[in-house]
Length: 146
Image 1 (cartoon, one colour):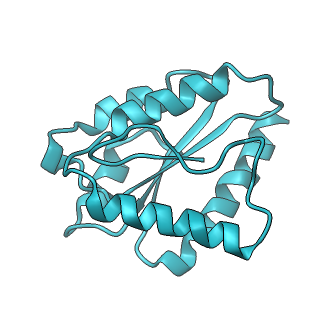
Image 2 (tube, one colour):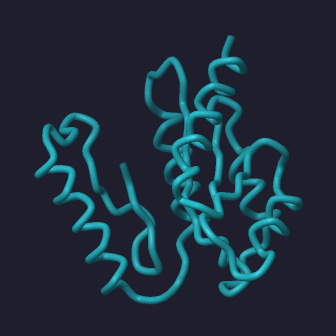
């Protein structure tokens, strides 16, 4: 599991070969995420992070390759055009890439949703619905790979 911020495009949070084994290790990951978000430089690495994630997973030998990008939908502030993100999300047909916009300034998330490739963008205005959105993504990926 990788994170991205204004400072990093591939901050390693969890290694594939070393998932957290207990609550204490999971809490440590959450604390790392919180500390990084609190102290990193302002900016946005959504595009390099998405590109890195897609290329990395595409190079792996896997039955299914799914990339989930969580974003605050604040792309306009950093001059990122939705079409740029859409091109990256659909750049490798071996990878099912999705962006989930958590929260929104005004109607920005819904505006982005309309400008991104259908089925690759999702809006989550209440984090309680995030597991359900992720479940829908995973379920649809099973249908597409069949």
